[in-house]
Length: 172
Image (cartoon, rainbow, N blue to C red; front, side, top):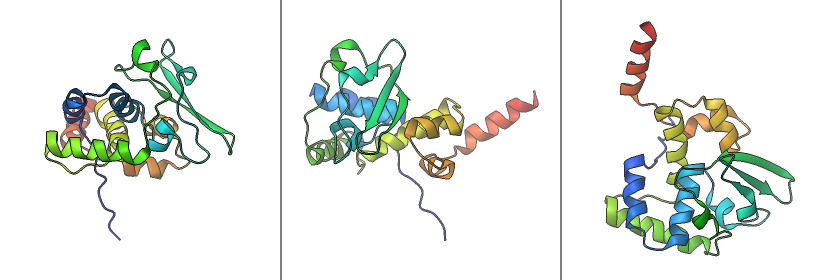
């Protein structure tokens, strides 16, 4: 059975959406999703997942620690260049999940003319790390918190032009 291609947001599209957003807490949520690969539930909390707090962000080490309360599981992801002390002070974000999702979807429709959901930010992070920054898939897997590498592979989309460029460069 053929697998459906994963939808994601490109870096230039993300920058347009980010600059169009007027409310800092929403901008912060977008930055955590696209810049660090966090899930919506990890940003604002849900069931056994506590929302990200400023204590979990280490700007000097460029890392965010994501903690799952009930499972006793945690992972570390990278901080994005858009994170700084002033916007980290906004954490934890007190935004209802549906409000955040709906606002992002409406903003994408208005700014990009695309119907994207909040999770496409996470897909965009994975795609950007693998295809634009050449971060090895196992490292992206670790940042996303996937137990299986093939799951991480689904989040990425091969860019044929970049693949040819890299292959050609390897011959030199």
